[in-house]
Image: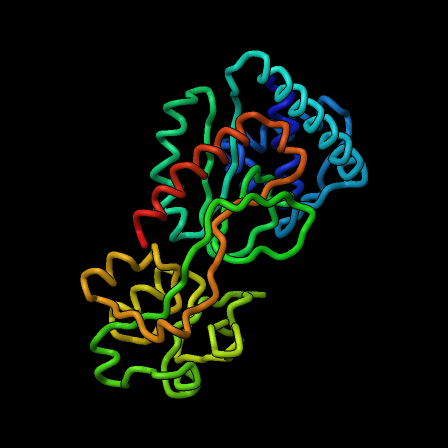
Length: 302
């Protein structure tokens, strides 16, 4: 098993470009990770990386070994998945990611419950509002709220998610309440979720002729959805949010829904995973677990 762990470490170092980052990904300190890589090179009798003070890149031998190591890890993973179906006790590590709000409100509270039911499964969770590369990041599952782009990944829809436009009463008292979508354009501070290659440079709103894209703008934006919510609560502008994220604030009156007839296009709460993961029992178990309880959560927060 120690050799397999070294192979996993080596692959993550290649993919992340850093021994420190690769070690952290497999829960090893930089010193231990560096020692493991050196031992692997000594065992193979070749140098796997070109090292400078600024970069770490695989040698030709390292590139070739990386491709073969990936094949070995995939075969072992598939074999373990097959055996796990016979044992009835899935084990191993699941690496998952989720957007910040959905991760904090829905996924994270359920992870300990899942592990309690399946104690031989470890869950490593990462949260970010940025799009992730599941294959490059070595992830098993990526939960999302939105509309995923076409890809070779398998998608499972968990639930539909209503979106709402809302702002604080103080903001609306100061700047007026929009009556039609066109009022948003240039007249209001729209709080936008933006990051490199972000899809949200516009809001898709319902109109008499169907859904239409509106190029809205604002004085500031962020790549963290919770920052946008806090700005809205601080009377800084209008935010476009999944209803479950703002349900409590709408109930207390801290935020007010606007343009209900011109509501934003609904989103999907779901997950993406590589096709090969379909045979992994622990992946199916977690997806089923989150689906059942996630649907219940969303049903109670509308």
